[in-house]
Length: 142
Image (cartoon, rainbow, N blue to C red; front, side, top):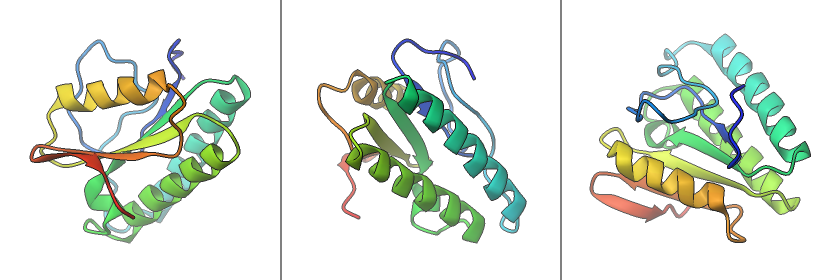
């Protein structure tokens, strides 16, 4: 896992353009609609990375697919996104600096990087889910 002084970023499989200089914990494409093994692999990887970051006192930002959170791309993606969201909330409830960004398909990469950096910086924020979409940036009510 690449180290980042600002913290750990847990990225499940999503297709999001990112600046070349950005350190990412993982980058992949969207899960196929029947890839339950991919969910298991991604969850195990996210758990390991989250555990390392939490033990090191680093902030954690989960980058989630908006479509997967809403169940619009199949069961495996929905399971993965919602499991990671639940993990983020559990980490935050236990006092860790964990947050998430839900990325829309047409999100501006600069907006995404801005909100990731804001959540990594923390300032006492934990347990937040920020939606980044071309037409909207803000909290998702879930």
